[in-house]
Image (cartoon, rainbow, N blue to C red; front, side, top):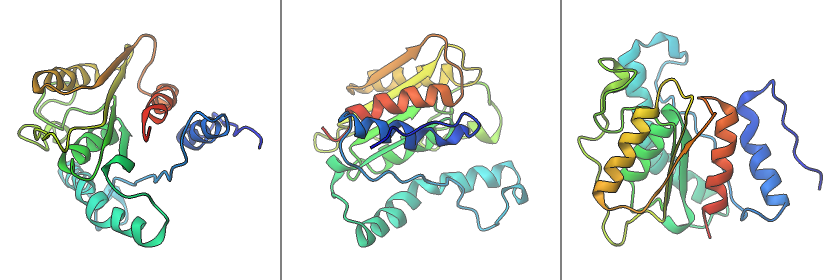
Length: 210
């Protein structure tokens, strides 16, 4: 099997390269990876919505994943079920939504990653203060029980990120205060782009389903 190559002209193509090469080298378990479109609005064009409507459409993905997508996957694919076989990860606003989804559905999702997540999971000041991006999804994060404690919880942000350093640090502080076990990486030299996403996805994939 030849290595999967990466075309830098397609910044969003990194995930199949990262996982494909990890699996080829025996560094990752077999898994089905579903790329979720966070946009759940009725309009076919995102530009038809104002900012608050767009944010509401993004928030709906939290339930869309558990209520619609996961049952569809069970019905149509040979997936291993249970929270020990289910992970959610995302970057930027997708990182915020992965944290929202993971904590909203702790009984169904065991592995959670927020990579440079935006500041709308819980209330936090930041780059987007006083805008639709700063509206918190949770008043406070749900406290896991002994049976729903995340099996692996991962946060990461680059030192050159212009948007979400404080957000990510704040989530780390909240996790610490909640008594959760988690990994927090603050990585020198990386910004808010696919170069960093590739590194973080490698780290996350190497830790899940073990």
